[in-house]
Length: 529
Ligand code: NA7
Image 1 (tube, rainbow, N blue to C red):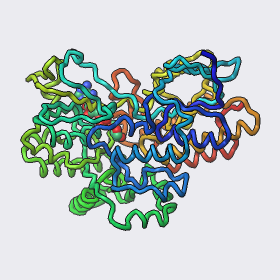
Image 2 (cartoon, protein in one colour; image 1 turned 180 degrees about the vertical axis):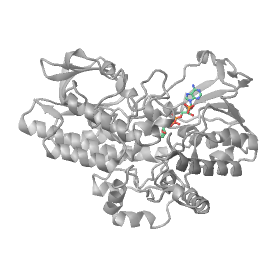
Image 3 (tube, rainbow, N blue to C red; image 1 turned 90 degrees about the vertical axis):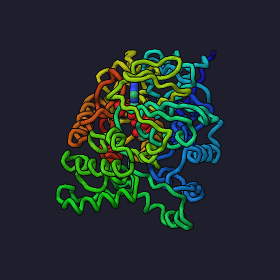
Image 4 (tube, protein in one colour; image 1 turned 45 degrees about the vertical axis):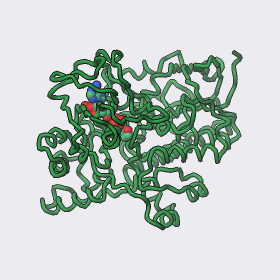
């Protein structure tokens, strides 16, 4: 096939990819986006499992780059469901006429930097060869499913599903016995829904998670309009918090409050619901004694809600509260009071194999018609690692990152000229509201490309010194917190053999200020040729 030339190639047509496409097209660049799925939406295209819902409030989980767009779109609930978020992604793609420049059902297999020509040579599974000056990875942070390697999986005669690759038409579990493996955010959302349909539901739990009620509800009349009346202030307030999400982290420390006051404070946050619980006190993620008080409060709630003391005990997490992402649930713990739901503690009876009839644990054979793997993702770097990316001197990105990802600002990496990552490792990404983080990265990359184009520059890449200093900064911020104390996907600890490195920058406002400073100073820490 002949080589096709573009100024920019974008890999992925989730929220990052479609906004990047829109911006670069407006600059007059020739741009093509390649997308594995047959539609836009990324995470929200693939994660169609029952109960899938965003844990950031709908009024925040949306673009703000276009006033008309943010004023005209109507959300129906406080937390948007997957179908509604997917509708929104489709609406944006249509509104800005983006589809014509997206090639769907296409997997980018390879991207090699051609030093002689000064461009990236990109190859797809459709056999196309594309040459492009700029390569933008909009490949998503949670887009590569983690499918466990359990002996005999292929022998199972029922249906198997991964929450992150759910069938488009949905699944009907009526009259079926179902096993769900995993109890992270996806499982916690899916389990109450599957339990309502299934004949019997077996929940196979390795590590219990902390779930706070989401308190989702439809918007009250006028509620959305009042936010929209001063949307800018609403957005600015959110952008001023460490997570870029509009809840308050109270300055008071948990250990400074009396036990009674603390209980009241936690109760108030429990009633308000959602991720905001972590803001009940300012020291919950930095002091393990403070953290214990929040953890014990949630365990108390589990004991209150779940009728069987034994089940409540097994459901009660012991790890640091908030160290793995807190789950926002709708009736999760209550589901274990149903007669058709059983909890299996994999610490007591580990999975030994999967056979034709179901799952074999150390104590029983769990016979089922369907297995749902709610086992998470190869987060942040997984989607970059599965493309054969080679920079200068044919160095593979996976080799460069063998000991863990290294980037400057989470936007670029030394040795890979004109390669930009949206929400790459070392940026705040998964610790923030992804939509504003995406917008901030897209706009920074757009401005950077415009700078290169207008000056006739050929290429930009981070200096090694700036990159190493940035990695130190990301690590030292993480080490001041309790995040490194458990085996979370933030650390890559859920994937066997993945280097244990904290992959996100903590503190959205400081990060945004640093990126702006780098840009204003003519891209300090980068080499421009
Ligand atoms: P998570 O949060 O990574 O949860 C995955 C769950 O699957 C978790 O409970 C794991 O237990 C469990 N798991 C993984 N592998 C196995 C095996 N082999 N056996 C048993 N159990 C296993 O993924 P989610 O999809 O729920 O959520 C990801 C993010 O999406 C979430 O944080 C939100 O940001 C949205 P473990 O804890 O590893 O013991």
